[in-house]
Length: 180
Image 1 (cartoon, rainbow, N blue to C red):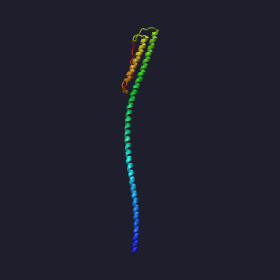
Image 2 (image 1 turned 120 degrees about the vertical axis):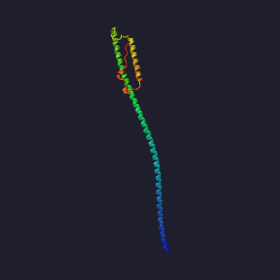
Image 3 (image 1 turned 90 degrees about the vertical axis):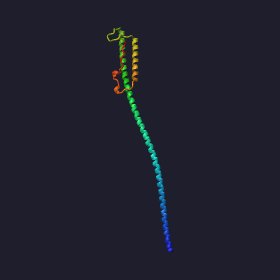
Image 4 (image 1 turned 180 degrees about the vertical axis):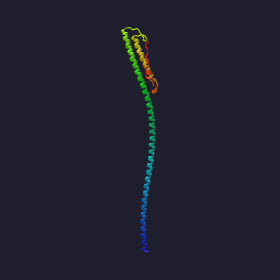
C-alpha cells in the first residue's frame, strides 16, 4: 500500500508538472492570440485610414485633372484671341504704313504747290487741279488727317478676320482725296 501510495504520489506530481506545463503553454498561447488580435485590429484601422487617404487622393486627382482640362480650354481660347489680335495688329500696321505714305505724298504735293506758288502762278494742265491758297492747303491737310483718323477707327472696330478673309494691301490702303 505504501509502495502504491508512493507510486501514486509520484504519478500525481508528474501529472501536476505536466498540468502546470500545459497551463503555461496555454497562457502563452492566449498571450500570442491576444497580441495577434491587437495587431489585426491595428492593421484594420490602418487599412481603413489608407482607404480614406486613397479616396481623398483620388478626388484631388480628379479635381486637378478637371482644372487642367479647363486651363487647356482657356489656353486654346486665349491663343485664338491672341491670333485675332495679331491679325488686327498687322492690319493696323499696314494702315499706318499706308497713312504715312499718303502723308508723305501729300507733304510732297504741298511742297511742290508751295514752290509753284513762290515761282508764280502756273495754269493748271490737263488732269491737274488749280493750286489752292496756303490756308486751303492746311485745311485740306487737316481734312486728310481727320479722314485717316476716321479710317483708323473703322479698322479698329472691324471684327477679327482669319488669314483667308484678310484684305489685300491694295484694299487696305485708304483712298486719296482729290483737291477740289
